[in-house]
Image (tube, rainbow, N blue to C red; front, side):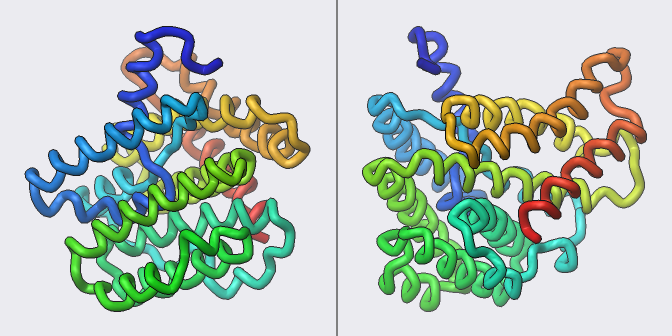
Amino acid sequence: QLITSTGMKRVRIDLLKKICFIGSLLLVFSCTSNQRQKEDQSVNEDSINAVLNKNTVYKIPSPVELFIFMKNNGVGFKEDVLNSTQNVSKYYTEMSKAFNFGVYSSDLAYCTAFGKNQKTFDYFTTTRTLGNELGLTQTFDKTMKDRVDNNLYNIDSLFQISNDFYWQACQYMETNEKSEMLAVIISGAWLESLHLAVSSVQNFNPSDPLVQRIVEQDLLLDNILATFRKNNSAELVSLLNKFSGLKQAFETLQKNPKNESITQEQFNVIAEKVKQIRNEMIG
């Protein structure tokens, strides 16, 4: 069991408060008011506790906080580093569909955080296509699509829609025993968020706040690897092997002096590993 004591359970809850899955992609909009933030934190904690009670817990990284941070720190939007929506037809296996469902979901969050409304709609449509092919039709029903269509420029409504989508997706995968698919989706979403962050570093500086955020992704990578190790499927073993190489790149940071979190060479190695895995998975 991943949770063996009350203390560890509290740590899990604290981690999960900071992270959501695909459905929290538009969580950026919660920043429109402190009151909204407080209300949603309460709702999310209740939902998290409900999942914990099922003893099926995932430490799920979300790209949303990272993208908000990037925008607030003056990082520019880079359309050319997204996975093209035209690639969706290339994904035939369940593995590639699930991974790229996560990738496109992260791209959706990125477009939303930067206020790219048309791109937000395009990536929602693409994500819905893959979701339906993965059997997540319940999550992407016509009602949900109509709500997005009718509220594309309504921040508060999109926020509520995103919360509804999140819990519907989680509940669907939980009740239909799709834990392995969920793990693959998580890894795709996280890797894409790291790719977008790395690609946004124009001039390397170890003190750059974005570079520091990239360094911090090592913890989330640990969570993903732990999820992979819980399953014995060939697909997750394959992903474990790919992501282990990235973990090794992050581990070299531990040998640095206390006043040096990352060097240019180490950053380049991490960036190259991210690029390699991503290229293999998005085709």
